[in-house]
Length: 314
Ligand code: C5P
Image 1 (tube, rainbow, N blue to C red):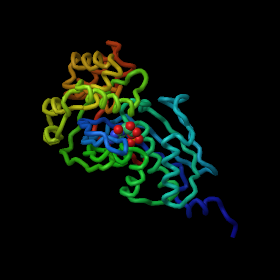
Image 2: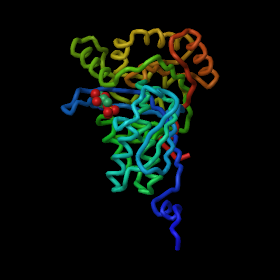
Image 3: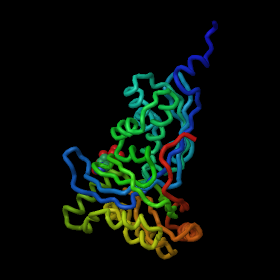
Image 4: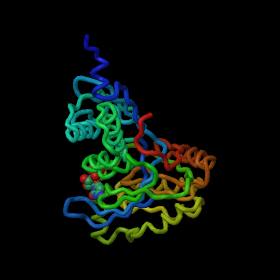
């Protein structure tokens, strides 16, 4: 019998293309503890996946290649330093297969924005290549590989709302009532470096210039169990915010403009410079986003909702 290319593809897994959608994250609570000996900080955080997505398509190929369009095109390196390529290599190594795929990334999550875009893309690559190669790993196995790629990557496989401990890689879901929260995300011009934001926080703490640490997530977790955004608003917090404001003083005006526009609360997302605002409902979110853009305090303001699912085949 003649060999047909489809036969080989059937045996090796999906015939492709595999398309995976992955969300951005915000931290509703980002409690930063002491610097550990491995260079990471102990975290106590609540992750929340929101409806801004990157999309990764994986097709069969004879080598491993990555192309992209959208946010960051021309700025983001597409070589072995890219987290997508590193994720594909890590999965192939773990599963004992050749890392062959043609990957294409459509980015909407800004680079170095504090929304974990790079980590999201790594999570998408793990889920996409696992399907393309038919390696069939469990979510927990994928999360294990994910943790080696970056602290936020395991959460982006899970999505939803989840508690993060350790350096952020130990994730457990927060069981909350099915509620949709409405957020406005104010995207800044240019990014901020995450390692620099952590170093700046350490410096502010050493000199006594940092605010008191956030402490426990109890108030936030309690508020998440209710459906009232007015209850949730005062419990949002981010220990990295002072550092982000020191590095990018104009963010103070962004936060102020969002609250003046009627947002219930505004915080810096992760290590910034993106700011995220909680609003009462979808209509309020539209109004706040329009006012933020009109005030000229961000590059773009987008209405989003959360929680949404993690990296998933569409
Ligand atoms: O884990 P990831 O590679 O995404 O982290 C990027 C950088 O952010 C780390 O190299 C470290 O400087 C800082 N970081 C930290 N503590 C954490 C997570 C990240 O200091 N828990």
